[in-house]
Length: 266
Length: 360
Image (cartoon, rainbow over all chains, first blue to last red; front, side, top):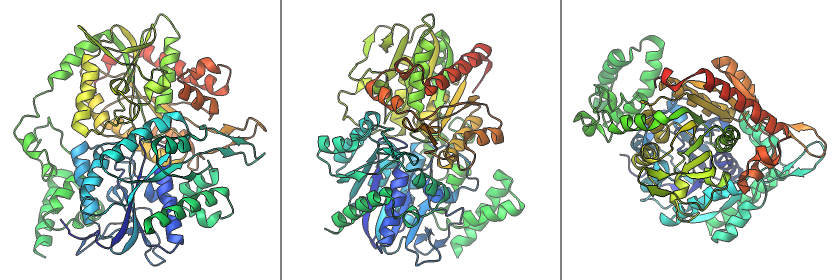
């Protein structure tokens, strides 16, 4: 077991949701890009072993994972630049990207333990941990292995409708039970503005995230709209924030990122 | 250095004897394996190789087992004996004519929404008995979607009674066992496994024409458990749900591989959230764009039936939030028509197949 790989990581932030498909990986990716644009050195640990989405969203392909004296070298999403965005995901360890990782809990727990301790992150301002939906092996494994290192807290992602917030309430209970500070709630997919006529449709309802924050006494970080340009950027692994700085989605994400940066530095 | 030499010899032996890997594939695999130097390397190698299975002759003895926390249990032979629950469940399931799993590698694509509406549609024929089992232990959405929040299960002499939405539509979910909507089920795999076993063995379903099983996203404990425990009884097949974008499809392809690995027939794939028609100007927007050809291209590549495409309709989410059936609330919508067409295909499939024809 490598010691000290997290010693030079200033802040650790988990991105959680009880619900699947609300945009955890999307928000993790966009926050990472926003933090990087703000001059921070960022790492992303993708502990969704069955459905690792981050590598595609950052267009890193299938690089080989190398080793150094301290452990596994993370993959850098920006090799031309100063290695400001480091990434580790099971996707890099699978030869065939369509291969299913059909593991029960104990095996997942063991690999996540190694991901947390044996990746040589080096100096990072912020390590974001993207998680699968739920409150099970992966989440417990991450927290248990991060126990020796300070975890600043968790960002909870929801979509507005009750079926989502219903699951996220359970995730909030998980955070309280594991003494994980909730930095705030993000309401994703919050309204869709038709590009043809600008009519706003609340496809997945609206306001549920904000209500959930009030109900549970958590901070509300903001709403991010449904934006096909964002989805397309993620599909193609493009930096949405660089490509569409005029959009209301950019404003929403930047606001959330700045709020988090302020609370981390406080 | 010493470690490197040991690893090299060991990895070579493993590759040659167990994987049959030679040539170009060998050097790529060797490189990846080479990463895992030192004592931990064999542990990590096991993650690249498949677990032989707890009931295999190699259980606990294969090189893939080294470092696995359960190795000693498997090696003792305790896991080789077939779980008696499988036979018990097989007996229980003799009164269930058809069993369908609703799967997706990806979260949030509409598995629970589809499972609920499939159940409603099948139960609209009052001569049919329908059962809906929710095995999403951490995120049970079915009670809310079926308008059954706050209901509790009761125990009788013949087991747990499911909750009835209609006379001919029964539902079971861990949601009914929780006393508060804030209760979190923070369980590791083995406990989830036990719950699923109980759902299949101890719920008094009675005579059922269709048992629909809603699952969480992924390919893990819940999925392995449901397939394992129904292996005696047989499963008609799986319906796979996706949304059009590649971020979904890449996870769904893994789910399809899972089905193939466990010999689970795939009825077909449904593309959900397939376009949004603006209620004002009636133009269509691809909110989740099919950048790599959507489910259609994936089905063509993998030779699977595309059962249908369901458009995004805000009234679907609203119905789910209110616990009502969208098919009853807005029966004339394009989305409802898409649902009904897909349901008919599933009815037809079941009519022409029998679960006992299939072994998992």
